[in-house]
Structures are given as C-alpha cells and as structure tokens.
Amino acid sequence: MPTPSCKTIFKQPILDEIFPSNRADRFFAALLGDASEGAYDITLAYAGETENQIDFEFQLKQRPGKCLACNLTYGLPEVFMRHPIIDVAGVVRQIDSRMINGKKCGEWALGRTREVSRDMHVLPLTVKLSTGKPLDAG
Image (cartoon, helix red, strand yellow):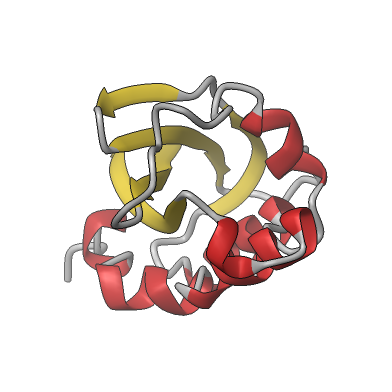
C-alpha cells in the first residue's frame, strides 16, 4: 500500500483544526485590544512538499472594509515566531502529530511576507522532515 502524501494528510479541514479561524480574532484582541481592529483573517494552508520538506502558508486575507496593504504585514514573521496565540511551534507539533507517512517534523522556519494580491499576503512556513526523532526548532 502506498504511503499517503502530505497533500492527502493535510486537507483544509485538518489545517483548520490545527489553526482555527478564531485565532486571528484572539491575536488582534491581544495585539490591538479589539478583535474588530484586525485587517485580515489568518488561515493555515498546505503549499507543497518534497521528500525532505513540507511547505505551508499562513494566508492573511483582507477583511471586508479593511485595508491589508495599509497594515504592516512585513514584520510579521518575527511577531508570529514569538506570539503565544499564533504559537508556530505548537502548530508544527500538531502537524507532526498528524504525520502518518513515517516522517517526523524537524527544524522549521517562517519566510518573509509575500504579497500574492492586494487582498492576500502569505507567510511561508517551511518544515524539514526526517525519519528519525523529531527535532526542537524555531
């Protein structure tokens, strides 16, 4: 029986469990004092894989009546790395707990914010894979 790919394992409903949609409201409430002040929603999405790596994206999607381009999204990798509500390390642990292809999550990194369109920016999350003991990363 073939080993399932990460694309099969990490369909959007699973990613929504790992990173629920209400986390953006909690993030903005903590950061700005009011969730309604947030300019975007945050979604975790599968972005691809190689033999030794799986790629995800934190997709920042502009909220109605807000301006994503007017907000400072380019410093977010550092903020996301440290913010306990975003909890990137916890996201990677949850990804690791769902791996069923004999691989384990190892080191991970957030890339620079990339503007996909006027109303969507992404922060790449790259997770190295190994067949041994999982690594602590960050």
